[in-house]
Image 1: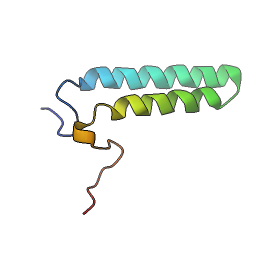
Image 2 (image 1 turned 180 degrees about the horizontal axis):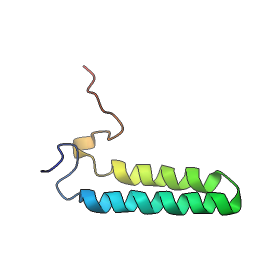
Image 3 (image 1 turned 90 degrees about the horizontal axis):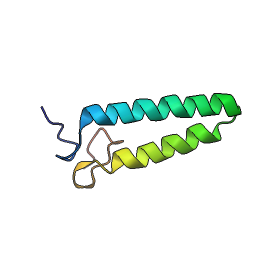
Image 4 (image 1 turned 30 degrees about the vertical axis):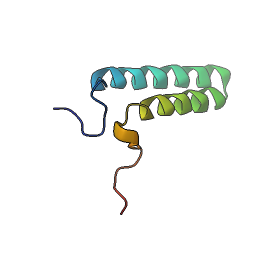
Length: 67
């Protein structure tokens, strides 16, 4: 079943793998460097990438519609 919020070419399983890899890598870098910047930067870029898969500009961060 396809998500109504994702573009047709989006692969949900691959997006999950992407998010998992970004989180793990960013957490490791932040831990080793003892700084928040790698985590914040990686999460910001991942968020922008994920938003690009939204349908018709739908904001994936928004879970309710506004009237």
